[in-house]
Length: 218
Ligand code: DX5
Ligand code: ZN
Image 1 (cartoon, helix red, strand yellow):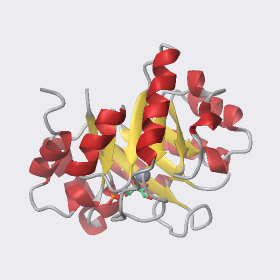
Image 2: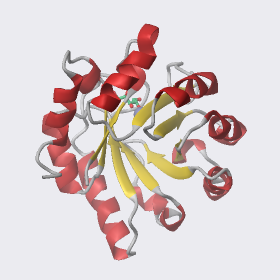
Image 3: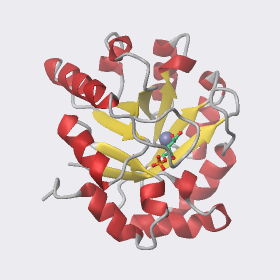
Image 4: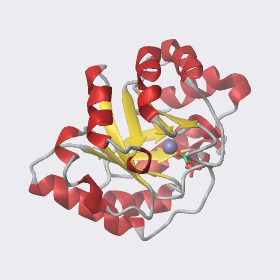
């Protein structure tokens, strides 16, 4: 089944609660929360306080994407704030195995994220330990960027690797996902589609979610 994870980075932060409720009612499967620290990526967004504030307003899992240096320092806070999935960038983790297990020790699903230029091979020793692999289809930091086509080959590779090891992990894509690029990602093997501007820049968000999901769940 294809899951849609609207990224609240493109929501209106002055009415964040309403914008989250709207996509929940519109058929979203996860709420994607982009955490940026101004060091790992050239932008600053939100922290654990906001995660805690939105936790009670939705029943959907909070899919928290940590674009931060030294994630170990903040994982406990995000877990306590109510994250259901915590994903860390392999580029930011010197001791990735330790970080993944720190997330799991808090009873949270663990994801690992690869930037567009990071090869898939780095996940081979850790894929058995994770619940989700997120492939960035833009360089992280901002919403509304153009989808990088070359990542499609990496999606295929992750999908084949998971199959060859009999793993049922989520394969998520993030960045420049719209109804055209979504189709390519799903055909390559992705099953969780993050979309920010393609949902929140539309007046009818339910329609945008349905269009991105396409016919795949029919
Ligand atoms: C980018 C973020 C994405 C972003 C996606 O650094 O991780 O989640 O919000 O936005 P769109 O869908 O507009 O590319
Ligand atoms: Zn993201």
